[in-house]
Length: 464
Image (cartoon, rainbow, N blue to C red):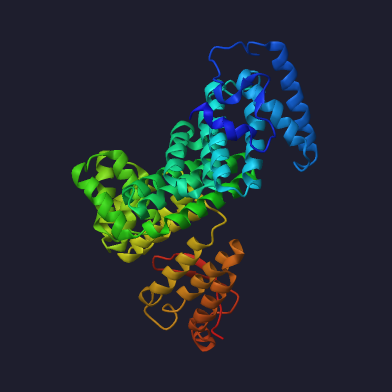
């Protein structure tokens, strides 16, 4: 941007058109100036004056007229000693932004917005490193620049998108939340206007989701609930914006083409699996094909878990077993729990109840506070009750063991109380009646050992 844009930019509304004999219109700042410019005495004096008036304006809550004096001296410093202090650009953004919000003149607003963009550009030019950490800050400044441009003029969404894209490329997961939100919003606008393809939206969603997830994990580990909440909200915002583009047909169309061209691209396969799983597009053959290809190229318990789940859904139980066994080696204990329960369900489906119970108990061991494994075992006992006996007593004793497990499930996980009470109410009438107990010389309250594959001790109870 040409410095001539500063004609209106710095002085309209500041009641000052030039300094001394040098008109602003003809002024061109020079590179490689000393820190305090050619006239260091005047620079230091004017820097002090602008800062003093700026502080007065700030102390008033940005309400009094001290901004006029601050702007006058700030303008001179901005042009004559641009590397004197980074505050020139931090304060300049605040003052120009204030003018933009106050003006009703569209043309003046446009010129002031050009000024605001120039202030950001000059800061990038002269202060590319953070003053304290000495780390690059160009990405951060570009992020602020793009967000401000969008908030003042959303119609420039294409330009905003270019600025924020560069910001994210530089800062990646360290970009600020609003940068992610406005970048994605401008990109979806471009897609709806035909300025870019839907695939750009999908790929940006995948990338931003990774960055946001990284921040949620980071701040969760640090115990910073405020930051976690902020990124969860950002995640929700992007999810809502993405919704019109999240149709399975579109996602499959985009990634099927990529998969057909490069089916051995591990990064692509991971992206396909993650996105289709997240958007619940797992019924499409592409999902299964991608998982299997990924497992063949880069075997992992995580891939095995996904394949096993798919095979369970397809009732390919025997084939699912080795994958689910591999899945139990995952590092995430919560997913290991799930894998063990899925494995237990697989064995139940092929009527191997002892193995089903074995894996359910392993799941309970991994997560001692989880009641589901015991409820699952209770269901196994109900299913096998009739086949485990040959008379009117032994065909009913498994219900004692089943109710024991339902009671244990709700004792471990109180949230399951209502569900377990309903099962107890449903199956307690299947206990042996009192006359059967009398016939077999059994007393309520005594211990009884159930045979068959169950092989557990329980308490004798009569049906009520």
